[in-house]
Length: 377
Ligand SMILES: Cc1ncc(COP(=O)(O)O)c(C=O)c1O
Image (cartoon, rainbow, N blue to C red; front, side, top):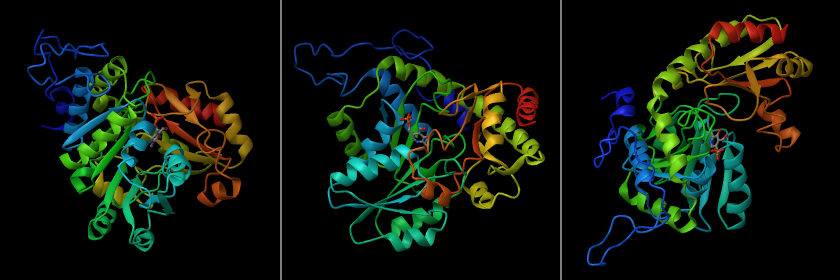
């Protein structure tokens, strides 16, 4: 089956007990274990819950993985996946991974003895050179945020496999409808389900999927021990969001392409960053590993005043953090997601005060284009 069908028909299309077409919300903390003569599947809801199980099986199917795990946020999924490592282990990470992932690696995990080297992962040789005898994993995210740089997943996974390392890929921007790193050999895929997978800006949630059962058991031990699990209502919202992922993404991707092409021609626009554009330096690699350019892009105005004026004047986009919802969101990375990065480092990465990131929603693309135009003018 294609992903669009799998979003609906993945083994959880109807409840075996009642025939309900929605997965029941099992709101309980504990389960009656009867006369204790038989082992039970569910005993305590931190360890497992039927609503959560449906989401965990669904995301494993969609990502072509063996096991799936749901968490209370994307960063809970990421920090729990990183929880399988031990003091003295070394991780190589892309320098432009999500700021929260960088923060947890660089603060808490560093304090607990995990070593970190960050590299420009779009240059795979930098990854190879960063590997040390104690390296255990490579942490990647492609396209990167907010400049949409592309990392060659197959090449990086090849380097990781040669050195016996685990590859972790944050697939939040692409979703399994566009990119499936496990099919390329990655070992763990993580998601902020808060974004496209949930899709409606109404829930914070995270997911992790493993290629093997063994890695799944290691992540389950962290999930159960640290307990960063989501409640069944939030899980249900994510399950509901998943059903419309393909149609949302298809429409949002078309809008992203349309807006980028319009913005490219605007005299106040300095540059547009989107892997759907013919001049994107990573387009060839992106096209080889993904089935679409996704629905997030960024652009630079010529001056910081123009960027700030755009954010103030635009009417159909919320000036907000986050992405992947049905409403268009315009983010200003220097004041939002990347505010904590020192200025010199930000400038080195190209994250300037002229940069705006856009996540188009489901509004009419012509209305968005007209609104962007008036805001720029
Ligand atoms: C790529 C990426 N990964 C992870 C996260 C963290 O997810 P959450 O905010 O759900 O904890 C985000 C949030 O913006 C993100 O953009």
